[in-house]
Length: 346
Image 1: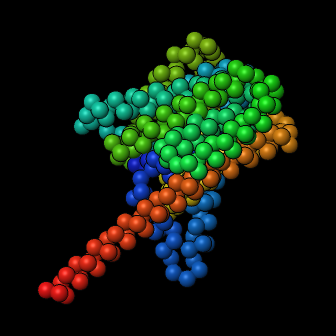
Image 2: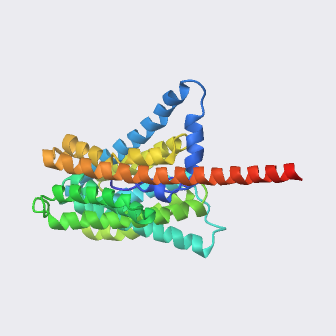
Image 3: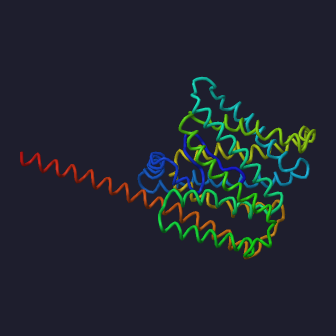
C-alpha cells in the first residue's frame, strides 16, 4: 500500500483503524449500513464494500504504474511527482481555509505531511528493489504493530506471532531471497505508516472535511520536491512523465480518497479496516498483472498469514469494544432499575 488513505474527519484508514478511530464513527456507520428494514441492508452494504475494494485496487495499480515510471525519474522523482500533483488536485478541489488555525493545528499538519513524505519516499525505495507484494506486506507490519500495542491484549500476541511467521516465510527464513536494503526500506515505511495513522487522526479532528489532508499533502510535496529535483532534474517536466505521474497521483490518492469518503458514510469502520487488510494480496496481484512479478506458493502463504493476522487484530479490538459497550449498557440499566426501586419505596 503505497500511501494509507485518510479522509477527514474520519480518523484512520488502516488495519488499526478500528483501534485508533472514533467509536462514534463506528456506530454511525453501523447504523447507516444495518438499519434498513427487511432484506435490503445486505444489498445496500454491497455498495460501500465495492467502493472500498475499488479504492484498494486503484491504489495498488497506481503503485504498479509508479514502478514502471521509476526508470525515467528514479524513486524520489516518482514520490515528488505523485505528491506534488496530488496536492495540486486536492488544493483545487478542497480549497482549504488558511486562516483561523492555531499553532498546534499547523504543527499537526506539518507532522502529518512530514510522515506522509517520509513514508512514501521509503516505500518507493523499497519497491524499486523488491516485489510490490512483498513491500506492501512488510510495510503492513507498521499499522499491525500499532494495533497490537494500543490494544494491549494477550490474544494480540497471537496475531503478532502469526504476522511474524508470515514475514519470516516471505524472507526465506532470513531475507536471503529479498534484497535486505529493500526490505529495510519497507519496514521503515511501515514505521512511518504508524506515525501517519496517529497524525492523520489528529489532523482529522482539528480540520473540517478534507482540508487537513490537502494541506498535509502540500507539506509533503514541499518536502519531497527538492529530493526529486536533485535526483531527476529536468526529467520531471517531460510531458509524458508528467502524464504518468498524474495517473499515479489520481489512482493512488485522489480517486481512493473520494471512494473511501463515500464508503465511510455507510460502512462501519471495523468492516472498512478488515477490507483494507486485503492490501497485500491486491498488491501482489497488481505486481503480477502489470509488472509480471512472479509469486511463489511460499510467498502467497506468507502474505495470507499477514492478512489473517491483520483481520484477527481488528476483530479482537471490535469484540473488545462491543463487550465494553454491553457492560456500560448493563450498568446504565442497573442504575435505572435501582432508581425505579427507590422511587417505588418512596
